[in-house]
Image 1 (tube, rainbow, N blue to C red):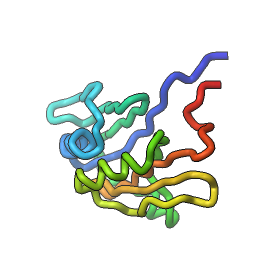
Image 2 (image 1 turned 135 degrees about the vertical axis):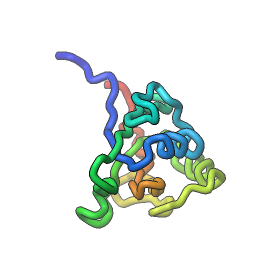
Image 3 (image 1 turned 60 degrees about the vertical axis):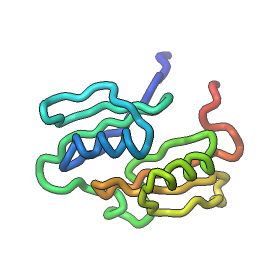
Length: 133
């Protein structure tokens, strides 16, 4: 059976260039590639994680939190949630949920992007997530 070697969700934005600047400047991602001038689509990467951003053509992006309270638009597993939280605090990110240990064995927090997307970062306290099978 074929292996899945990477994954990326796609977020929409009314300003792809501005979103890319946010993901680079605040979240530490780098550009893999952009398409269009000004960009209408971008592929970003940090470590083993990817995020794609596409132009919203019919108004503001649809946000998952508008569908149901507590939903996020993307979730990234990290190896040190406290350290990343500290980094993003220094980067003056807007937090949508505080750093907290959850009953399901994860310490996590959530930020809000300029487009209103809620992006969560979580550390699996059991150490299962991210381990090669």
